[in-house]
Image (cartoon, rainbow, N blue to C red; front, top):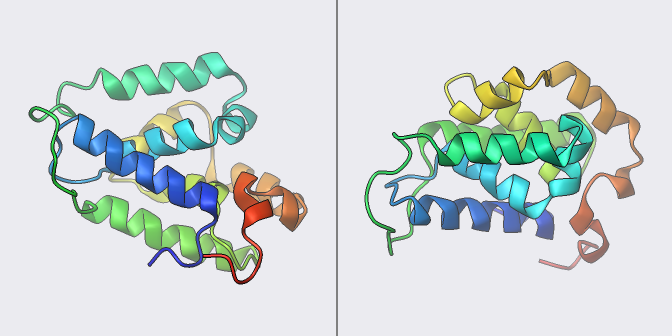
Length: 158
C-alpha cells in the first residue's frame, strides 16, 4: 500500500501508528496522522501554519482531547479508521492530480484537509488552511522540492 510513499510520508504514517498506540486507541485516527505529520515534517507544517507556536498549539489541542485517550498504551498494530483510510486514499489522488509519482507529506496534508469527518481536518481549517490555497502553493513548487524525503526516493528505492 505504501510503495508510492516518500520515505518522509512513510515515517509520518509510522509515527501516526505510534501515536495511536501511545494513546491506547484501537484505530489510527486522522488526528494521529496529523500528529505523525507534525512530528515528521515540521517544516511543512510551519510553512502552512505560519509558526512553530501554531504547530505546537495544534499538537497540544490533539493531545488534550479527552476522547483520544482510550486506555493504556497498546501493543497491538492498530488498523486505520475509515476516516484515516479515506485520507490515505485521497493522498494518492492528490499526488496524481498534481502530476506527482510519489505521495509525500504535502499530499497527506491535503488529504487531511478534505476529511470532514476527522478531527484533524477540523483543526487545520480552524487555523485558516483551505484545500484550495494549500493545493495551489504545493502545485507551484518544483517537483523535487515538495517532499523532504525526495532525495532518497529515486526510482528503485522502496
